[in-house]
Length: 316
Picture (cartoon, rainbow, N blue to C red):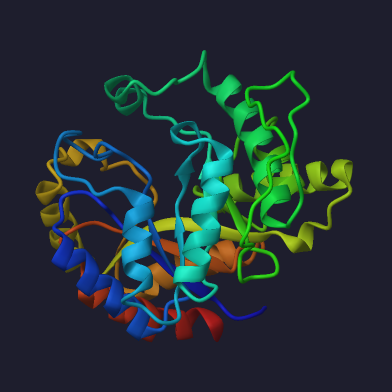
């Protein structure tokens, strides 16, 4: 097996900017591979009307206070913006950050924030995934220096769309989040450089097999797509201590504990318990892990995940 790669997503909600900026600096200093933000206009855990910061401007600000971590949205809401604008945002972030941008994108799911802001939500998830496929194809072409004109039978009406400057990276990576077997994973197979999924090892193995079939059908080498797992680790010397931290975070985010008690993406426990969760997913080909960190951000977990747990996983 290769090296384990780690990223951190700082929840944009229930925080203030000084805390978000300071923690981003810490993530970068600790040597994490990438740093992520949500793309939401309302909070997605607990009270939707609690404070939350916008994603793209967060990334741009982080780009100026970090040096090495790659930067992206996990994941961008395709419905929020025209795909040509998103490609321009990604290329601009790439220049601001010295070539560290990742374009994260997904179909979007939170109806409340769409209705509140007057953003078209579409007739259903299937339609939004059709929009996503069309959008990602256009963004890939533009970021690679090509030109896009719409065929007239989709959502978008591009006319000789092309951009300068191109990204600093020869191929700015596109991250797609989601595991829908018929549409999302086919879009991943066609365009993605990174794929983000969550779930049990059994579920991930099944989704990976579906992705491999799509890759074969579209003529894509499946090894070109980096598999990433989303998780929410909280690390302490005992599971009881870790749970107390978890409960305090949940309360801070105005979320009933009952709403998250059965969420298997929370890995709450000792370094060895978290390492075992990671090993079980590495066995099926997922070597990149992205931790979602709720405010108030947990410095001890940040330090121990990369300092203690990562070496445990890499040495078996």
